[in-house]
Image 1 (cartoon, rainbow, N blue to C red):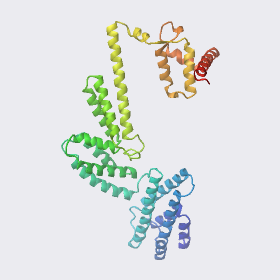
Image 2: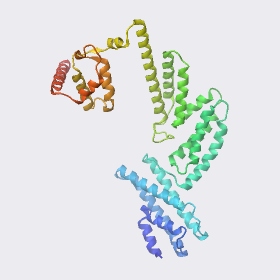
Image 3: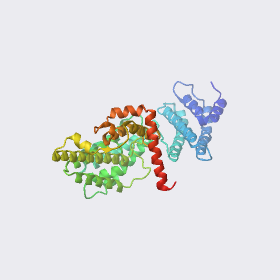
Image 4: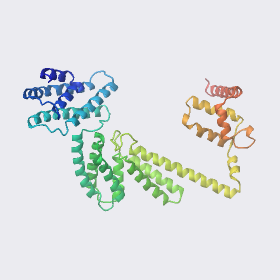
Length: 404
C-alpha cells in the first residue's frame, strides 16, 4: 500500500497534469484498497490548496507574453482532463465515510471546469464535450424549456413544420449520449428567447415574425435554412414577371440586412456559416438562376423573331481578336500562374474565352475548348515570344498614358 505522504506529495507536484487527481479518483473507485481514516483526512485537508494551485495556473494563461496558441493548447488539455476526471467520479458507489471526500473532489473539479469555460470564452475557443453530470443537469433544464415551447409553438399561425424542426433540434440534444457545452448554451438561449418573444407577439404574421427572430438568433440548423429557402422559392414561383421576382429577392436582401445580428453571435452549428451568410448565399444563387433564365428567354425570343440559328446568334456576339488560340491560352495561364485569377476558375475562364472570342485561325468558327486547353498545357517558344511582345506593347502604352 502506498504511503500517504508519498501520495500527497505526488498529488501536489503533479496537480496541474491531473495525475494526482486521477490517482485519488482511482483509489476511491470500486475494487481498490480502501483509504484509511487518516488518509481521507489528509486528502480533505490538501484538496483546497491543490485546487487553488490549478486555478492559479489557469489564470496565469491570460497574463504575460506567452504565445496565445500555446495557452490555448494548455487550456484545451486541462479542460479535457478535467472532464475525463469528472466523468470518472460520476456514478461512484462508495461507502458512506468516503462520500464527503468524493463530494469535495467533485466540487473542486466543478470550480476548475467553470474557470476553463470562462477562459475558453476569453480565448474564443470551443469548450468541447460536457461532463456527464452537467450534461444530465442540462438536459433536465432543456426538457422543461421544451415542454413550454411545445405549447407555445402550437399557437394559431405557427407553421407545423417550423414547430417540428425547432423541437427536433432540442430533441436531438436530449437523445445524444455526449454533447458540447456550446450547443447546450445555445439551445437554452434559443428556447428562452422564443418563449419571451412569443409573449410580445399580438398582431401580424406570427410565423413570419418567428422566422425573423430565429434568423436574428443565428439559428443555422440545416433544416431551418432549407425551410426558409423553400419559402422564398415558393413565393418566387407565384410571380410570373422576372422583374417581380428580382424585386422580391431585393426585398428579402433588404430584410436580412435590417436584422440586427451580433458580430460574435453564437450559432446552432459553430463550425458552419451563420444564418446571415447562408441566406445571403441562397439569395445570390437565386439572383444568378433568375438572371440566367431571363437571358435564355431573351435569346430564344431573339432567335424566334430573327429567324437565325443558335450558331448564328452565338457568332454575332463573338469578339474578334488578332491573337492566336495559343496566345490566348498562354495569357490565361499567365493570369492563373501569377494569381490574378484563382486556379479553381481555370476551366470556366477557358470556356468563356472559347465562347466569347474569335481568332483569324478559326475562320469564323467557335474556338475549340479542347484546343485551347491543349495549348494551355503546351506553350511553344513562338507563342511565348508573341505574348511577350504584346505585353511589352501594353506596358509602353501604360507608361505613355501616365508618364511613368
